[in-house]
Image (cartoon, chains in turn yellow, orange):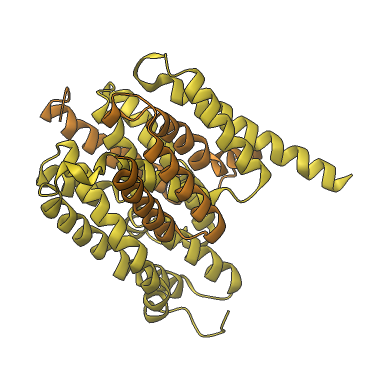
Length: 235
Length: 110
């Protein structure tokens, strides 16, 4: 980690590599959402308002299964709960700013900006509020517009892809690809396996409610393993 | 979208947008620097790995495209995606290998 000051330019440079993830991912969302039956306006409003890929895929999946609205929302919002953690991490760094500025930052609090900003802010305890905001907005400057643009391209192209391309499986593959690198510890593995086993065992429950039960069990198992391991390490 | 009227799609979009914003705004805007209990923060760490595997497992085992019958091509593609993602930690590499495997398998097995 270098010692140069936090600035918009530095944020922009740090955010730039994520373009290679954001663009194909946004396009894929545009394609999948269009294939699922959303029109261009719906795809674009969703991608701009929500700006959280995994939850958008989850909502499309649940809507395709004709789940009730509150189940669609519960599932998709559960995927986004991690952002409360990002918000808590950012609060001591950006909390002194005026409310409107914190609201704008909150909208742009995506995985990439949260992860990069956390690392940089913690490495530079002396950075000013203005420098931190400049860096934060620098990170999202290349990411957010390309996310919108890539989704638009995917949505426009999506309707023209023939069925033989087996696009039904684009969503499962994307989910698996996202989740595999997240399984970093035994606790994560335990949570993931619990989620799978309970969700499959409760698949008979109506409207995907079994998934919500599975998610709660999995969070409990992950937490439990983490605590148990910490205790053993301390002993 | 089958079984999902337009008005409900818009409702989902609006509420998902609002809800996601409120989650992001929670501590930054409303709760301030009040501390959350440790067990809540710990549980939040596991939300993605708690939701997504359970969401994806039935899609892999019982794909709608094959009327819910387990399909060898899709199973192998899923396994390759997981393996590549786990080893490389690279989301795009995992998607690309999963898709390539799926097309190869569909071409071989049909």
